[in-house]
Length: 136
Figure (cartoon, helix red, strand yellow):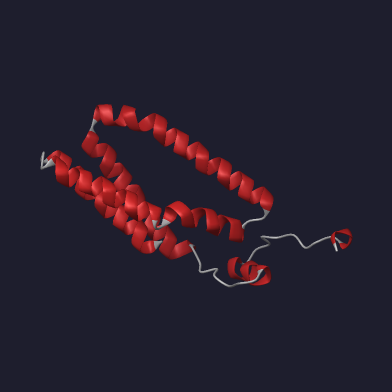
């Protein structure tokens, strides 16, 4: 996740630079493809796995809703922002990726192979409700 976030930021930063100096469009395409590859091997699939591991069903529903709401917002705003300035648009997206990388470093914890009780202790909160006697 850390490598993917920072690599996406670097790819977007280089893309913005190549657009700003009107460098070869082939390099711009390579940066977009690199960004996509880093996304597909990091936050793209891992976000869904991570959320499913650490959240109860109600929390997962809220997280999925928020994720898709942000995707729609970005989809609507990107053409408007590109109309103002392509370079600034992708510098902003680069900054979000870099900030996201620091967020991963600081807040995201390894959950592989941990039980639900261990996850509760890991996040120091009640992520899961204990089952009621009738659920047994």
